[in-house]
Length: 322
Image (cartoon, rainbow, N blue to C red; front, top):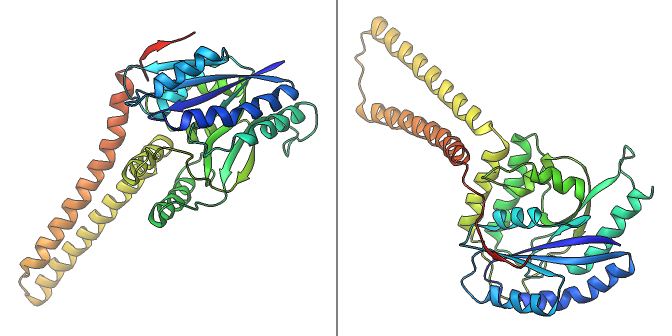
């Protein structure tokens, strides 16, 4: 039988985990009927509640449940990377524990990949499917402002980056071993998995579903955190902000030079003294703002480089049961 390693990043999911485990029981049975056994890789991302206790209880009564516990909260990206590193299955899935990722889709994802290998559903050029990803068709239940900024982010990053990131794409996906190994080769500290999944290539088949509410607990992603995460994605997969800053600087210099020439010619031709302190102050503030903007953009890329060259580990495991 093929083995599917199911990675479940967990941060303060004490209430959701029992519901998730129960929801996965019929899915595991269905996968067994399709010829695949399942193993869980729970990654406790330094939770402050009883998440680790719940995971240990699941592992005590179910040998297919593995777990890793971090020494502190390193973030979901680090948790997914740890899961990928410790997943030994022929296929690897990534799922959230809050049941916003529909568990019942997993058997269909497995069948699509297996059919592609058997010559069934193939890519447009005849290649096998190495990943079945999921994307939401709507954002029902989300605040309107958050949904608006999310749509703008996907439009922007697909304009300025060569790496395509599908609007509404979730981390919830099933991947072959060769795609998983390719992702693990990208051991960068500053991770943006949605971009990494796309950058490594391989044929991806998308399944759509209607957005679901959390089964229990509260979201860990505030608007501000998502905004910072979107900035990380832009910096990780595009150098366009640097080019834009350079272009703005060039246009500012060109505009300032032309205006200086205009003032000089006007003074020579009409003897008009240069006046207008308010306009002068506005120009100084504008140019100062442009300079600070350029320095800020450059600083973002420099900060990411600084974090990379220190070569700190992406995560530190405190304990695990395998």
